[in-house]
Image (cartoon, rainbow, N blue to C red; front, side, top):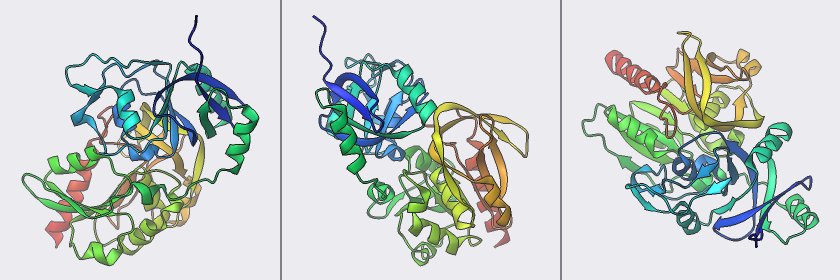
Length: 365
């Protein structure tokens, strides 16, 4: 006799998908999105940018290589849920220390497997990312829709995932000191800077400009993170006050925050960009990079006309802005993830560009 479905995904329009539970139990109201990466579910699970989201993995088999102690992007996982076609809870990998489902249970992350993820992904592409209720299979769809309509949309995701106190990551051979504003920063960003001789002081998202100036940094880094960039007003204000004083490099949410600090605007994409194979053109060199992406919002290109920012990179799938810079202020940012965890490593040169800006600044000082 076939096993009975025990979990359900309910959309606000009443659309329903059934599956089997793994990870943590309990109901969740989340934004549903999809990720096309073939590997990297551990990095996705531990990336704070997925806070409050249910991630549908389009690759059909998830969990087969388990969880590895060295591959976490953050010590605590804040993703809302993981939805997969086939879940493997008995991993085969000499580096694995535990199964994916056990890790999800530890951090209260819901999981559903046995879902038709192709159909679900097409629904998200056609109708856009939207809110869902993950609940028991016996909950009526009408009841789920009522719960969804009554649920508040949280606007404090960055505050929840940012560090609560300052931490310092020392480089083995320090050449520069970088202050990183943590909006949900991935650990491989810190490692990428450390490898290039940057000691990184990681500060909470609401650290005021004067406190950052007191560190006398060589450069300022703006991290990735979850949610609507306009909700991160303290960071925008800080960047507005510090632009032109230090070289600035922003990634993902940091790219949006830099653009907002210069007076541009942002908007929400229909279903976002999430995966490890997005083609981006560098407008200066003409080269095409295959990039790792994870975001719901984008910078409005028309709004940049009234700012000193210029577009440096364009997404070749939909023409959205993937990078901006202000040469006068030595500030630049990209929408994608050059630290590549997970993903291709075509874009690591951007960290080297940040290093060059700090070198030039020291030379002229």
